[in-house]
Length: 90
Image 1 (tube, rainbow, N blue to C red):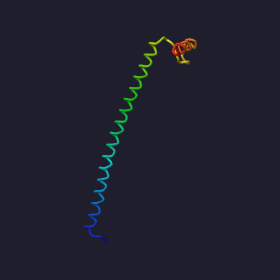
Image 2: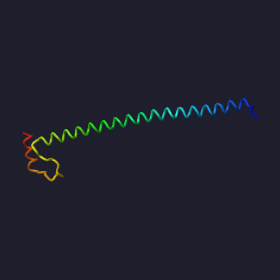
Image 3: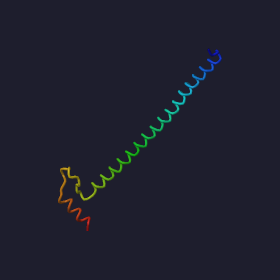
Image 4: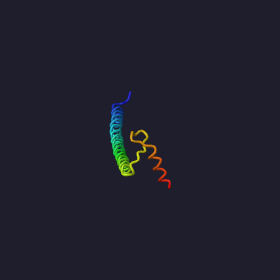
């Protein structure tokens, strides 16, 4: 049987390893959470940029000659669209 000194050293090493593992896991989790938060912020910024571009494009198309190019829109007129394309190709 092992002496009491050896048992104290074994359990001390065991508890030190467990404590180190807990501390290391917390530091890794904190870094991961920070990275995840930064990714979410970047994603939101990209969505805002895309929305601004879509809005700007929509506003520019509304300022144009009033031709609706969406075939699902009830105001869609194929003859006006074809005339616009012919005018642009000249």
